[in-house]
Amino acid sequence: RGGACFLSPLPMFSSSHLHVPGGVEVEVHPVVLFSVVDHYSRREEGQGRVIGTLLGTVTGNKVEIFSCFPVPHTESEEQVAVNTDFHATMLSLYQRVQPSHQVVGWYSTGEGVSDSSLLFHDFYGQDVERPVHLLVDLGLGTRRMSCKAYVSKQLSLGGATLGTSFEEVRAGVVMAEADRVGMEMLFKSATASGFSGAM
Figure: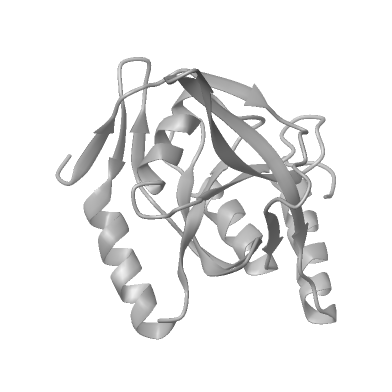
């Protein structure tokens, strides 16, 4: 596929549920969750998860996510690739409308982080100093719909880099009353589509 960036693996160590004192705090606007659910509902047949770019602002340790857009990718045991041309085109179009918003990280659907999650995180880390990974669990089956946010940290011993750790950071959804009504509609739609529960 033209414009595809093939990613190479590095070791990953998961340290979820670890909240770093004085660390990053993430605020997510509801439209982001609407977009992720819509993206997943339109995924290609057989595709396990979807990914996309997060856009927003960074003020100190606070990351506010206002919007996002999907990014086509392929994922298999042999390779992981991102359509970089599509990403660049969508970013350029978005920033014509919202020039103050920048790339702050990426999202994916699923239950947890994986080795390929690290590859995508490294891709976004090329242009973002401290990218945020927003993991949206759509509550398939008996699970409840939820979202978590992660940042990465290099693990080293002496002068040698051993790998990368994902650390969960504080995350919340910013909602006005109109947003709350929309979220209730999202959950009803998610339940009707086979998703379950609420955040």
